[in-house]
Length: 463
Image (cartoon, rainbow, N blue to C red; front, side):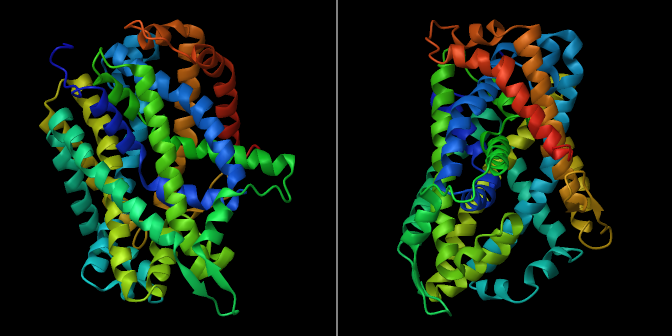
């Protein structure tokens, strides 16, 4: 069975694919906003500390579990301990919920990329452009199908010929684009309506220099929770992705070293996203402009920034949305692969049938998400106090509820039922030295479950 399983060609293939999965919309539209809001350098320090401890433990657990069981999330937990198979079902539901609305957002990116590519970027700053687009009954659905088709083409090609080759081609292009836009962002200068001249380097200071003014125990706790929540998006943990990719890792690959490379790569890309966005938004919109996040940042605020740049703004906007499209596609590929692999392992399907089934489910749910902005529109107040419609509800259930629950249960299974040696033996199977062994044990048994529980209680409005 193991011999027939697809695999990455080596360590580089795994690292590139895993890093490509980690570099998604969360890094681009959420990380810069949180960094600017939560004290700049202070948020960066907290995030880096959590990435090297909390994130490292969760990432190590999932990758090692995947390689040890040679299974996808739906079946891996049952192989590890039969009575824990239901946890695999929850772990598989997460990517199945995320994929449809991720493809909807990916469709929005396709629309904006084509708009800037055709030289019509000025339309995107017209009053109500974004809202009129997403409330349309046909165009968002068409764009969603286009984005899902791009994702399926890669997944259908398989692990090494599809996912790995795609990641090897796209990631260098993505990195080059991010660096180009980041450097350009730092060179910007603009005189505002108030007569004040703002520069990109001043915006960079907001991102880098820790701001301790007004910091209280409660506000610092909020920063820690924000950074920890961001790690789920950044490292692609609790989505079944890293279990799936771990199952494709060769036995000869140095697992500990590979995880270290993913940590470095992901943190660097998240930081560059901040350098790319924060200075540009600050230059043209001031500090108040940095209050936007998510769709508001990417599809409303940033197009206005590009148009403020003059003629070159069309080019920069086109490059930006091309970069976002690359990032969104690499992440959607990994999300879809987690579901496809689960169907293949559980129901012994061929890849083509599993991918088509996943695509059909995603299209059906994606249409519902699109219609959630027009004919199916409604609003409810979530336990955390935010007002939500269909897309927000799916995001809340998957990211704020199921993901912490899956990871808490995973920590209990590995830390207390199977014991940490279950994972440590896999990490050190080739005689590799695991330098952070003690840290891993402490995190998976004690620290991570507590932090995850706090994150869950916060999402439920208890804290």
